[in-house]
Length: 175
Image (cartoon, rainbow, N blue to C red; front, top):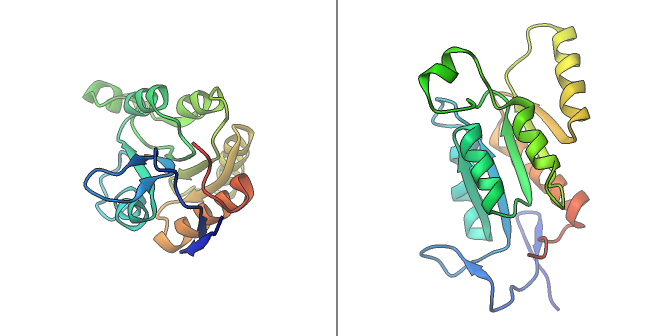
């Protein structure tokens, strides 16, 4: 079996029974959950799909924790990128009370079998103490990496490459 190198990811030829991207000929080999409910148009959640989908990565976007829960319940998630400030619900009431994605979705992901690697994106911290506490909490929840916003797309791509290298031995996961 021959492997090829695409943007740092080794990709095995796909079986003919694979799931195909809508409108394309590229087999979907990896499901990437992108939980981001922010207002920035140039966020990682907007930039990653056009870069990764031609490589066979199915980017599944979630704007709320409720959507993330539904996605997790109906899809195998191979990697999850979770912005901790994603609102819990799309209702104005939930947003007014400051409910966030936080550890709720991380707990749901940890209950999956197998548990997907998680990249946590958090808002910039005000103090070193707050930063250390937030980092510790995310790592206790099982995060592979913790990044602070704004995340340059090159840094996010490198983090995803490291996830695939460490958790999937540099190959797309088998479906």
